[in-house]
Image 1 (spheres, rainbow, N blue to C red):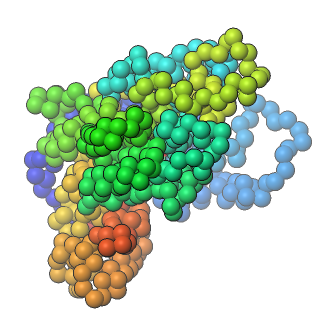
Image 2 (cartoon, helix red, strand yellow; image 1 turned 45 degrees about the vertical axis):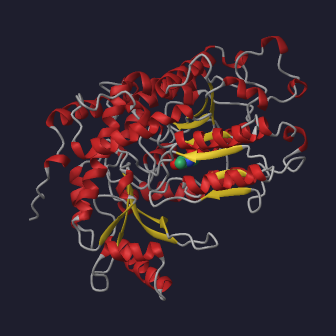
Image 3 (tube, protein in one colour; image 1 turned 180 degrees about the vertical axis):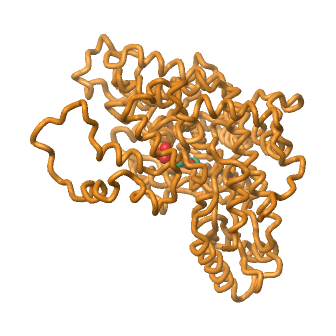
Amino acid sequence: MRTRPVIPDAYCVDPGFAKSFAQLRDRFFMRDAGHWPVFADPSLAHVVAQRKRHLPRQERIAAYPDGRRLLARLRAADRIPETSASPSSPDPLLLFAAALSKNWEDPACVENVITTPSDPAIVGTMVGVLANANLVFSEYAELASELEALVIRQIANLVGYDPARATGIFTQGGTFCNLYGYLLGIRKSLPLSREYGLEHGQDYRIINSHGGHYSNVTNLSLLGVNLRRKTIRIHITANNDMDLVDLERQLRACIQLNCVVPTIMLTMGTTDTFGVDQVSPVVEIRDRLYEEAGIAVKPHIHVDSAIGWPMIFFLDYDFEANPLRINAAAMSGLRNHARLFRQLRLADSFTVDFHKWGHVPYTSSLIMIRDGADLKALEHDPENFGYFDKDVEGHTHLHSTIECSRSATGVFGAYAALHHLGAAGYRRLLAHDLQNAAYFRHRLKQVPGVKLAAEQNQGPSVGFRIYDPALVGDAEAEFAAEIACVGADTDERRNRNSLYHRELFKRRGKVGLYTNWIESLAYSSYDHRGGYHRIPGEKAVFMSPHTGYGHIDAFLATLRG
Ligand SMILES: *Cc1c(COP(=O)(O)O)cnc(C)c1O
């Protein structure tokens, strides 16, 4: 029998924390009809009961009542039924598909920045579905647009924006929020682009980070930006944050060449390694260079904080008194994140994905804009909006939004989650996740041949690489050599190491934690032409209130297969 490893004090979960966290989880994440009576509905109760079984993927179909036959039907059906179906008998296929969709309630599910929604957010979303408000236009939304404005004020206050001046738009997802971020800069600095497109008039460059999410790139392509010639991807440091020296050099070159820089896209919390860009020095560099050059319209700074935004719940946390009794291991990372996320209020706009670390159902995304007047630049000619009554145009940003129909369910879900969990509830959730992540790092570091990536970032994501002990004596040194690309056979060695880890990962199967494989765990140093190699590896993201040290221990027991 395996005995539990001795846990150093810094990594122990305080009993007081554990108790209040368990209460939070029981009330807000258990789909308990005692707390949330809607879950007693027979269809919902069936789906919930099936999803609580947490069986391995390959066993689920056989374990579901009539599962094999239902699967065959699901795959073969291709006609809309001719006759109506009675409301009294729920469609078994509907329930089957819901029960056996990816189970984010399973504590082993740590694959990506995807979370299980909280009970209040599910109930709030359902209430919003009943109202079916359309935020495109105030007349089609009525009080739903007031609720949207309320959530925007709450987030504005939390981050440190002036709520009277700030605004925001709930939209399709973090990708769209980032699209708005780019567009705000483009329309402010190249106003003619609305009518004539981007290639009219002045030359320009868009600036983003090499460590950014892929939407930072795909959105540009969508906007018609020449990715090869008109996009500058700033180099990143070993922590995956933006290299400020490279940024200043590139920005200076743009100014010298009379090239407009509409937007600088930063990231706070990269998807794989939780790299966090600093906003303050970027604002300082931008303001200094543009003031020196006497250019009035400065680049719009948008921060992609799709995952990272909930760190703003810690901006005012009393780190000295530590009332929640968060353990020392998680506290050191949190302190540093609070320092960085305090800078978010300096951004011109930022992305909030409630459906990620906010535990709200899909999709619930909000772009926050520091100065509501910026949306003026996005307005299209009212002539295009002929079928809306001009007198009723309210505060729904009708002429500025990218979408027409805009669902309000995300607003209802987000509002309910914020209301029921409260700021302290969010702090507990994040602290729990970061305690898990810190414990996982601590355990991994004790395994010979394991190297953690971007360990300093101390976010919810833990990326690592496992080396063959027969070939690699010192994992730190081997990783450093892979990063530096020194030696004649670097490609061969990196590939050999990656293959070893990949085989191990596949052979191990899924026990304790369902980690996943990523191609860009880390990047090698840049060569003189800016070229680099991606270094693959394995990652786990701790965002589940259901995951605990026991799951981590079970995973580690089978780490090497
Ligand atoms: C998930 C993610 C996005 C995209 O957001 P969606 O809501 O999935 O469209 C953008 N940036 C980062 C850093 C993300 O993690």
